Image 1 (cartoon, rainbow, N blue to C red):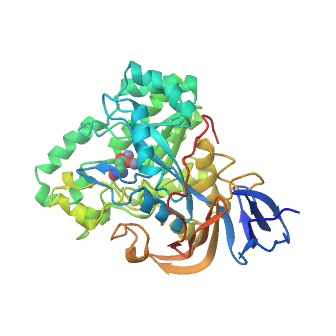
Image 2: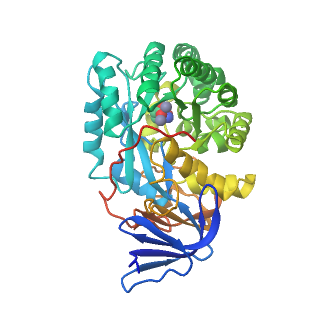
Length: 463
Ligand code: URP
Ligand code: ZN
Ligand code: ZN
């Protein structure tokens, strides 16, 4: 008989394909049994999950903890950001190591690990953001994939920050990863048109206020860049991943490319599904500035449809938290707003209420979008992203009946405001388990700082 460390009893186990009543037995950080009436030993911890769903832990593949950006540093560091993740039912996050021009990518990875390894409270991995495409960088790609980082990121904007990758770099990197494995994620916006429009609207910045942020970034600045990146993926055979897709036109372009057999995948985020650009007209509208910015209701509708029909495969958050004090640096100039929003803590409950509760998504679809697809695409499946014998015991015991109202003051994030302040939710994480250890209960962190581990990921994964 197995002496379980933990049994999650009487819940409804939910995977991408099934939902069924069972007990889940955990030993040495792994799921070792899924069955009825598992027997507890004297030392076995038992969680009664009657009336609850047992989901695989959420995976947020797009967070920026303690990111130096916009003249400040994002307010959730690796410690608090991963605590917030745990409270929101997310047991794995992927952050970014951004190469400094003139330096190696590996140096950026090592620096990021030095910041994160002893602090993270759930498991984490890194994407490698390439900003400098030279012979040394090119020689590093295979080494980085081998190291366990098969996902690269290229920014098609952020020229001034020194992060931008031009088309030649993107083409080359797609070509190389097509041969070596791995994929290229892109932040797709048209840099030159964008910068020109930003300066145009800045001439009347007092008139436009925070709404200038949205006026200066019309939808075509995203869709043009998506179409261009798709073109390079098609020509090279490389695998492309569109991060934080915000437009209906973008979703149409991904759909058309998929029909032609291009290897392109896309992610969207709750802010693009649930908010629209009227928020920038509010008194505190500048708080909502993120990049790409929140678009129109018809964009949200198209993105929801994309999640239903498979044009969009992943839900992530692009968490990049700035407090009201940090956001105040804008001082009336939309160009100076630190771009980014909190999100990792509220993604799953928001998507449950809005997607499952209001739009008829199945609980299996929810699991697919926030856990299974991310695990598959980013080389973590089946250790992560499902509940099966041998997978990591990353579990979210989710209470579908719990009603809460979102208030920033009740959340773990260091952010003192929430884009979803006052939203009423039905369904909330009850207990989050990371590799067999309870790390959060009823929205409160109860884990250990430094418990999370760095994940070495595999260079494959289609869905
Ligand atoms: O506004 C955002 N999204 N800030 C973080 C950087 C990025 O572009 O993802
Ligand atoms: Zn971005
Ligand atoms: Zn981002």
